[in-house]
Structures are given as structure tokens and as C-alpha cells.
Length: 179
Image (cartoon, rainbow, N blue to C red; front, side, top):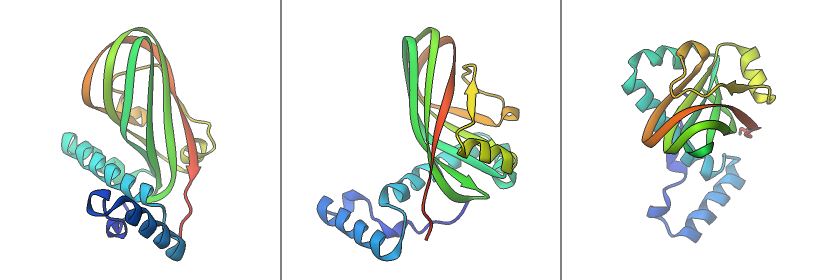
């Protein structure tokens, strides 16, 4: 993964909110840096990747060899018969941030509960990543853990979910400006 200078924007706990926002805006305007929200999101992505690698060390090779990947550090999911999930993530080409994505999921079936999970999608080649960035990518058929061969890996973060459902995930994509 590309190395980030996270010292550009300190956490809000370290700064007064108005001063923090003003500082970030000045730096963004002056240096053409991504917004602080993107930088803060990168910390969540880094933590999620570390957790994926800690839980399954074999996944390290996929981060190293995939043409690209999308990481959703936290997806919230809830259901009572009809379910839904939503999460925001970041998209990388060869380890370099290229965009943001939103995951939206709708499911129907026997299901009850709430849960949070992480998800990563690996793109084996340029065509797969281009399909994703053009909005031609969706994951069909609900599964708690999707096989690595399919290119999608999920990891529960917490909660309790009883589920026998069908549905699918849709993704939006928005490119980020680079300096």
C-alpha cells in the first residue's frame, strides 16, 4: 500500500474543531492534498488491512499481487425480514488510492439482527477494476463469508445476525483528485 503522511491532519481530539477544519482547508487549498476525511479514512483502511492480514496471513499475497482492491473498513448491517447494509470504502490501483466507493446491500429472507463487518474486493486485472469504477460491478447472493476465489473477503467485527437470505451488493465509485 502506498505510504501516507497522516501528520498532515491531526485528529480532532488534538485540535479545536474550528481551528482543525480551518487548518485542513488551508492545507488542502495550498498543497492540493486530499481532504482530511480521506486521510482519516486511510487510517481506518490501514487498520482493516492489518486485521485481515493478522486473521489470515495468506491474504498478504493478494494485497501484493492484485491489480487493485477496494477496502470497506466498516459496513453496518441490520435486518428484520428485509435487510440492508451500507459502508464507505476506498479503491486502490497497484496500492495507490484512486477513488472512494459506497457499498449498498439489500437482502430478503429469514434474517434478524445487526452486525458490523469489514470487506475487501480484489481485482485481478485492469478490466475487473475498470468494471468496478464504471459501476458495472455487483456481488449477488448473500453469504456470510465469500470464498477468496470470488475476489471478495468479509470479516465480522461484531454483532449478532441470524440469516438465510438472498440479495446483492451494489457499489458507487467516485475518483479522488491527486496532487
